[in-house]
Image (cartoon, rainbow, N blue to C red; front, side):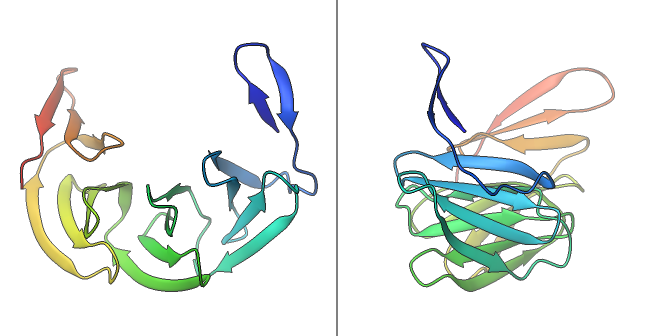
Length: 167
């Protein structure tokens, strides 16, 4: 369901959801909801019609997270081992990013930044999934800001470090 935060009122609901769908990404501007499923698929629902619009399959593990690009043409999905780049207009897989991706964020129209479980921060071609460079190797847990401009690092000394990405 999609809720209005100010009133707590349900605005839209989507039926036929599998209880195993563990993660949800709603993009109201694009009019879709993306459900990441433990059955290795992504289910894209139309918020207006409440109908299942697309099912994307290709992951070999449960899908943990998904994000729609700002231009609403691309979908980035992640499982425990890799991230996928999907073309939403054609429902085709465009590229696969290896390396246990924990966070993915568009940096520019042509670049993606990823954070990995091993602490690496990498830059990729946003459409092909080809690697461009590794820009950092940090210890501890790393996450990217939604705009891919900052990296937040936490480690065993209980401090958070915030790094600005400059490419």
